[in-house]
Image 1: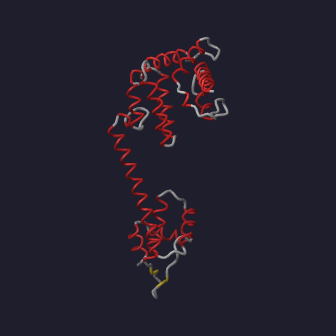
Image 2: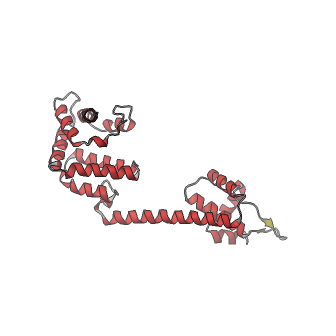
Image 3: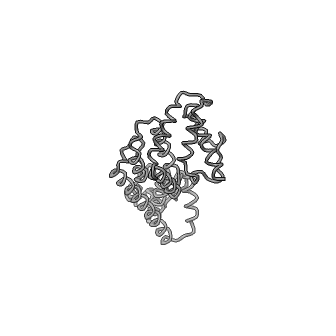
Length: 251
């Protein structure tokens, strides 16, 4: 094969082929009598391997390491591993499309904080009466952030806990009361006498299971520090006291 035929067969540019030669990722082929490179199936396999590995997110230095591990393998082994790479990529695409389809079919896909999971979208629907509360809106943003960063199992656990709080008898009324108390603290100082009432009400809505046993609840926890910085001083103090109450009650 000529370089153009090789590039077309694998779906890359001839410039990319030359770049991989320059980096030593793709072996130089033998040259014909007329000086043209003569590429073989082995070159096509290696080039396809490079393309798939980069599409999976590996940097070129990591690709070099993978190819070095493949050096002693025969063509059948390399083809089998390439097929496994493709299968993983196809599975990842199917999962992403399934999630996208679910989001498009749910209200969570178009929510202001979206796209979010169907579970969190359902929680947002259940708490729709709270949308006029500035603190409730901020809470929704925080929940969307936590869901994005949490591993799947932890995400499922957290959403179950939050849904249980709202779905419990009187849960919606308690949540509305907490948000009202916190909204009233906007602009107030941390020594405002209403802080204690808001903290106690908030603590009653926070499941003890929500806090890991080894949770760091002061400003050395970077997430909490950023969270408090986004609140008014009185609101941040109410959250600090509420978390301490929950932690002490669990102990």
